[in-house]
Amino acid sequence: MLTVDGLSSAYGRIEVLHGVSLDVSAGEIVALVGSNGAGKTTLLRTLSGVQPATGGRILFDGEDIGRLPPHARVVRGIVQSPEGRQVFGPLSVEDNLRLGAFRRWDDTVKARLEAVYAMFPVLSERRRTAASSLSGGQQQMLAIGRALMAQPKLLLLDEPSLGLAPLLVDQILAAVVDLKSRGITVLLVEQNASAALAIADRGYVLEVGHVVHEGAGAALLQDPKVRAAYLGV
Ligand SMILES: Nc1ncnc2c1ncn2[C@@H]1O[C@H](COP(=O)(O)OP(=O)(O)OP(=O)(O)O)[C@@H](O)[C@H]1O
Image (cartoon, rainbow, N blue to C red; front, side, top):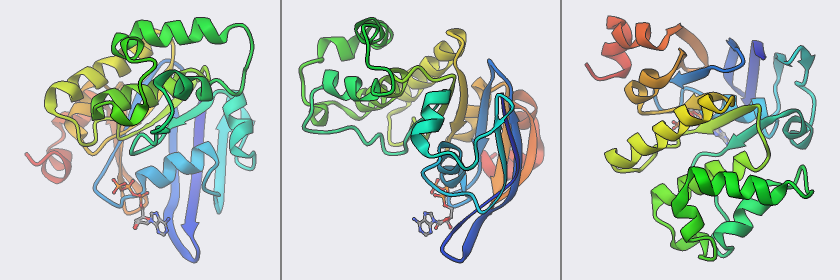
């Protein structure tokens, strides 16, 4: 589904991704882990098109999308749920969700809303509430729900567990597994590497803009080098 080949990206003259290559197949959860500042967020932003690539190729369903603007990538099914949730605080939960539907504004919006509410019932209960008054976990559900309204084929999820209590982390990661069972492919960035690798089919470890390890999620979890460097074991 997604092939990233030698991708580079820079802020001004400072390159932070140095020729990253990875693959994501349809139906997989692929985790991208690594320490602070490794370039994980930059990679997701380069895939969704809000950050320009300075080299390399991004193929999605066989098409080179590396020069397409972000909205054209959304139309093709690449949707990002950003780090820090970035919900629209003064707007209601439902209006936040409706904003996610912009790429296809037709009579399926209501059914899509109901599907999100079925997945996250607490959002349904609070549909008229301002997003700013939701808890951190609920805001994360809203951010994921908003991305789902765009009907992603490939969901780019940036740090969904950031700042959440352990019970909520489990709930959010269970939701990610649920997305996979609904046929959505997920590229998941997480600081919480062990939790992410535990639910991932495959994973990549990024270190200062390079892929330094890759493999099955379970294999990476068992790899002594990965455990020592990234899992604090
Ligand atoms: N807007 C920016 N301008 C300049 N440099 C940036 C910008 N955003 C990120 N960087 C730098 O790019 C590098 C990669 O950052 P990035 O946020 O992609 O890493 P990350 O792996 O997602 O880390 P984190 O988990 O802290 O978000 C870091 O050195 C960071 O300081």
